[in-house]
Length: 325
Image (cartoon, rainbow, N blue to C red; front, side, top):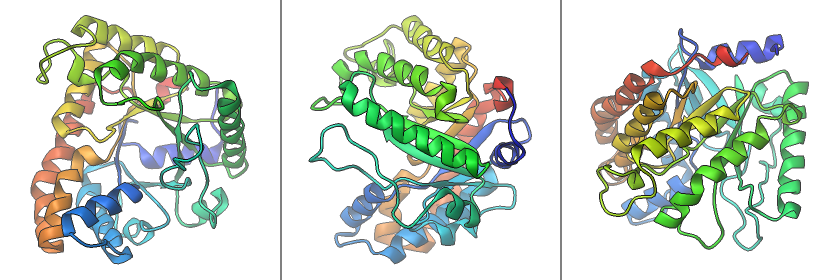
């Protein structure tokens, strides 16, 4: 399996000198706007989103191999990233239509892979809500959609990062019952999208377990798996992948995410890095909304850098993405 020159250049641009992807994620849009508005007590405008993203990018990219941004509010930030940091741009619309079953995806109206590449993207990222247990009719729509995106990235010779987030309609996806089903959702999704037909170069995946429900974890209470079972589940999901995969932080705390990476390492999983967003900067939302840009910059330079350094330390056991090729 070989990579074309454009895809190879894009992959090198977003990885560190070891070939590990130690990337920061700052492509949140709808959820970030809601959080900022809530903390501020009034609607957060475009200027706030742009400034927030720019500050995160400026302060954290010296400690990251790349930054993931969106073309809606993130382009000014992309110009302020460190020279060492590559750029991934998101291509999907934020959120989904809650009135339509299946959380169907949609693309940004005024963008194409060609335009994102012209805007400076080294790689293209797409988010897809997915579960292998949805009706076949729903998943066929999603499969065809990803195939089209794979072809568009091939045509423009740029790497395609597919992020899939599991779900179950009507379920509490942070609860115990879903935690028991999560390994099958993650593994089944990885098994599907590692197929060559989709043209995915890197899978951006959830940790296949919920750390809060690992026996002996700091969460206490009920558990869905023992530590040994959790390690086995990490390995089972990794075993189905024929493409490099990296972990996303999925909005958990910095401690919980680094604990997850430690457990992945303990299990012997050969993952190729992370795209870590909220676990690094989400606790600074209230600081920015209530105290302003200067206070937020100060928070990022201390706590934000500490958070990303914790993740980087956990990545010492990650495997270069080139191992899959």
